Length: 143
Image 1 (tube, rainbow, N blue to C red):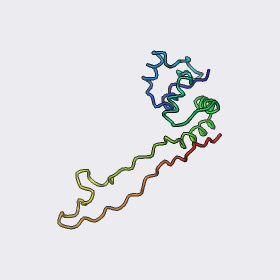
Image 2: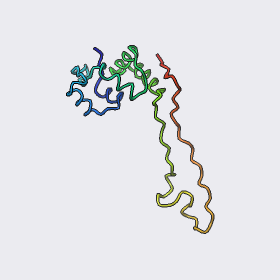
Image 3: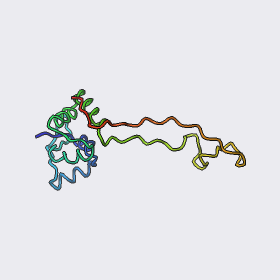
Image 4: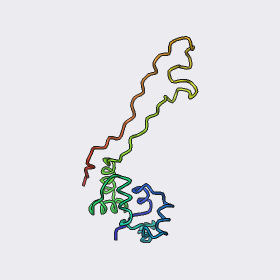
């Protein structure tokens, strides 16, 4: 039976540790004890649907094996899994700050603080756009 740590299960499903433990207590998930690093581990069979819902990716047998390797500390498996998740259809774009940090919150964005109200407001300097996570369709696997 394949299993992953509670921390990995939390990251892959988006479900809190407390809720995962509650589902173990209710019998929805199976705890398989502790791993070699003394971490609590959960059986993957009960987590697959939640992992797919959270990441937008379908996990095949090879993918689950790679996930277990990554969770066990295999550096290359961690890189591979991270690259695959990066291309996930559910990858979330970064949120861009709508107001410059130097602008006081009480001052309207179109009216600089040093300019009297009778003078026309100059346009604020445009901010460079923050990088946005672009997820290619298909979720190509690096392995």
